Image 1 (spheres, rainbow, N blue to C red):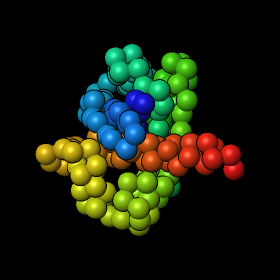
Image 2: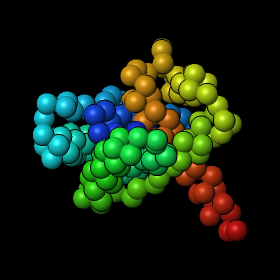
Image 3: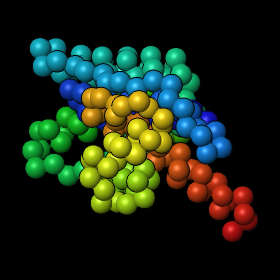
Image 4: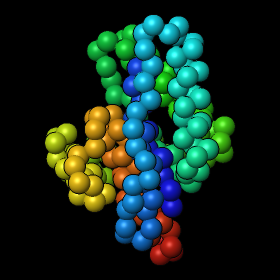
Length: 166
């Protein structure tokens, strides 16, 4: 299966595309989509949509996994991240791809087996699980890969239960 993981943002949105077959992971691509403050707000959202749809059209993921928004003390930042998240959900819906959402705690649990793991532990596990020579950079791309890995592990667990007839 091919999974697109998204770490949503407004200025920076991370994406990671992985394949997962059996218990084997492969990395197809990862990176970030950036928008600058010089671009008017609506055009930044449009740019994010265009670039995400380009990634979706190129890799044709079967699933999209998105990190849920955590509470932020800065309301303006939280709203802008929420808008970026909305664009990501819209792109997946437009392409007819099922979306799964995970909290940061679920992502850490799904990658490291420990929901309170720190960023360094998560990044090291991403490197190991995906067989990468170094930790993916920037952090937003690594976070997106983590969301995709989380979905692979979660989907495998759910499928196992469903196939067992429970």
